[in-house]
Image (cartoon, rainbow, N blue to C red; front, side):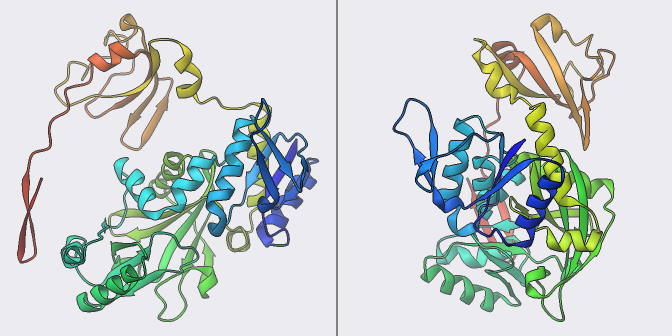
Length: 396
């Protein structure tokens, strides 16, 4: 396999470990400075220049895109995608994970447990927003920030209001997030590769510091995650479209609370804490994908007119409840069930004898019109009164 690692820091620990792991496995690997690419759109086919010369052919790339060059870096990755070069982390996944607001919106839509979060712009909405997440203390986060930079703990309502107003006055966009007291100064980093967690560590803050980032002096220790934490980490990475990701979670009283999904996770802390070859696991995964690539069925099968992939939800009281897949009549309607999701369980290629239950989610391929006819009419969202502490608010 010919692999390019896109990195501006060839001497960084993570870049060196990834390069060494590739060389040890007999792969041809180069570390290429992302900023030295030029995107060539002048020819009949998409192409790239590197240091002013045509780029040679690569089987795969591994992006290590820094936060400061996200826009240009994702454009380079997108061009590689246009050239049919494999990448475990596509451009849209990197862009989505970098924007904390966008990432939170995407994950919350899919039912991922997270600390209560709100985003406001108007000064009059700051206090109601703080109350909405449970009141002070609250965590204030810049929408774009890494390694704990731009994360502030505000102990009181007045301090929080002053910090937010100050940041907004300098055109900074911030999130307001509930402070999870039971996980103060402590979080978990799970390193996801493909569809599994290959390593995990607990990070503990130094002294009175509430941020546990290693770059802020935090210590690390190996941790064996239970099933709930592993599934939360893998699902979060998959929802963001990332095959290699560091998923940061707080240890809440009711289970894992995802804070962030990092598309370029550092390897030093987790390899030292776990004594595992994480870099090797990443290289092996990429090599396997190059040899036997997965197909995005949503894109490849859309060429069949009238056919596509959709998710069907089995509502309580629906005719499907209690029936087997064979009895459901789906096959007669030219619908094939690819995967059955039940709670946190994922059942690929479910048998025809599998009995359906309320709240099952079926990933299906078939006639779009048939699947569309099975989806209940979306209910309109009615206005409701949501009472905040000492302040009733009418929501449309």
